Image (cartoon, rainbow, N blue to C red):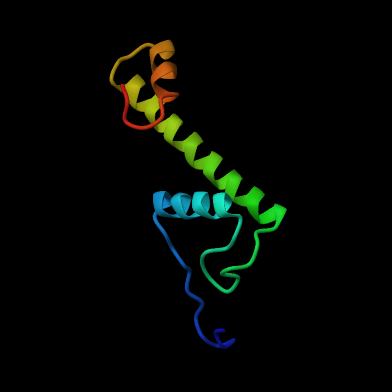
Length: 89
């Protein structure tokens, strides 16, 4: 644990690595990192991971939607493309 006068440092992950880690934790229902490693996830913690994963999905869909509109596609076509998971066309 850090002393009170030490600067705190943020543990930072790229969103796709954090999402991958959260998905694995949710599937196994056990913490895989940090102080609680090996302990069971509470319902609240599992819910937080679900929320984060949903947020990542929403951001990806919005990015794809805006990119399609910028490419000159219609709103209905952009909406269809934004719902495709992965790099599919």
